[in-house]
Amino acid sequence: MSQPEIIPAANSGDKPDRPGIARWLWRDYVRPFRLVLGIAVILMAIEGSMLGALSYLIRPMFDDVFTAGNRDAIVWVGLGVAGVFSIRALAAFGHRIMMVWVGQRISARLQSDMVRHLLTLDSSFFQKNPPGTLIERVRGDTAAVSGIWEVVLSALARDVISLLALLAVAISVDWVWTLIAVAAAPFLMVPIGYLQKRVRRTSRISRNVAARITTRLDEAFHGINTIKLTNTEQREVERISGDISDYASSHLRAQTAQAGIVAMIDIIAAIGFFGVLTYGGLQIIEGSKTTGEFMSFFTAMALIFDPLRRVGNVSGAWQAALASFERLRAIFDERPTILSPASPRPLPADPGASDIVLRDVGFSYGNVPVLQGLSFTARAGQTTALVGPSGAGKSTVFHLLTRLVDLESGAIKVGDVPVSDLDLPDLRRLFSVVSQDALLFDESLRDNILMGQDQVADAALDHALSAAHVSDFLARAEDGLDSMAGPRGSNLSGGQRQRIAIARAVLRNAPVLLLDEATSALDAKSERVVQQALDKLSQGRTTLVIAHRLATIRAADKIVVMEHGRVVDEGKHDELLARGGLYADLYRLQFQDV
Image 1 (tube, one colour):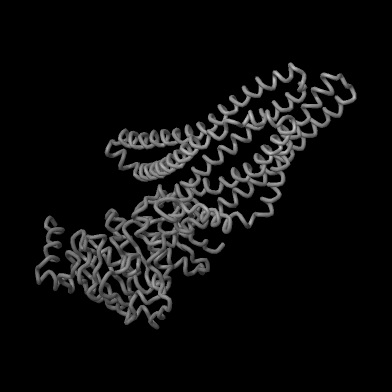
Image 2: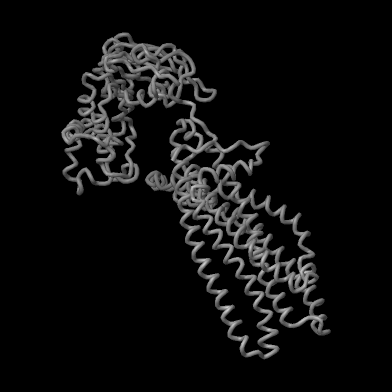
């Protein structure tokens, strides 16, 4: 399905453009199922009309059968009542199945479009929005939006038809009785309007708290070892329990407001019943009305308040769904700012033979400068190492190279082509990245290595496994390459995860290799194995390395020393030591006890 259009912006303030939202949902998600929905609406109307038929049959049941004692009529009235219930049951079964079928497909399509849109957004968006919030948007809010259609259509088709049919029966019996029954209804408008606003406000709060709970749980489950080692289980329980309590309170307030709408309808019904019972009862005693007429009217009025309550609930459900509509709109209104140019330039003929040049690069995170006039050149086919204290901006250089973020000033070029002039997918195909936290997905080892490369020869895969030393531990895996990595690679050790990531980089065979602290979290044995694999991978390839362990980059062709977002020195290992300065200080600090 194509990317949905952006929902029209709100007219003013925080109020949603309700017609615009409804049109967006209808156009992109509901209209494709209009035939099935049309049949479901017809079945709903049939079900709704059966209540009117039932209340109509009450009159001859009392007047012709019970009062007059007509034995012949009892069979026909009984068959009529049985037929009404049978038709109602079949119609209800049919439309419920159809609405569930349509609802699931609308929800699935909306969720898929939401995920597709989210994955186009910049990395900065995900830094500002925690995973729990986004998961709640994809799961909870889309479910609320897709589910509202069943509620609305049921109210407009089944319940409105029920109301009209029952009102028709009531009016046919006595229009004065009908006026008495509904005389107090206008007084509902103001309090129900207040409760509708309260439902919407509390529903928004409860959804936001639900997102916070999801984030808390995600943090707790992935940080379980830290929690145990710091003995903070009770602290986490209290934090999550507090959020759960907040959710329960806000949800209770929303449900209380919805229940208040229903209760007010029941109070109006009670007042109406009292008036009709008093006035109509006197007419029956006087003989101007029959018992059958009263029972038919009473049945119609008794049945009318159930669909009326459901119609009243639509308002509350719609208000709750509006809160979800607004949050989904906010997500769909987000646009990526890092895009391919309208007319991208072609890659250099041989990207692997092109230098990577940074000239006077400036970048800030918010108001905090990170890079200030950064300049250096990474020669093609050589290894360039970036070293410096934490916060010097080393990782930011990698983010700028791959355009996870965009520079604010200066230029970054591959050969003579600025990276901003290249097609974004083409640019990112230039790089293989191996970082300190090798992210694996809860898929097979094979899928984690291939990462979307479907057409890979067995020989190429075997070479990647051998070059990354994956074969060393693969033989011990129960299902070999089909073994599951587990969530975030939890079934593997740190060294094994790194080797899988290196195998992925070998298979990708990109001309430029980016190594970000690739061995810093490993033990000595694992580091040695992984470093051997990285050395093989970087041979003859343009390689940029970020390293705190200076022993791993002593053989680099050039070492760029960074501090406060600037290059303060560069050269080979021995040259930098001989000159003294920051690199020599860092080196002595690491090896003073050796």
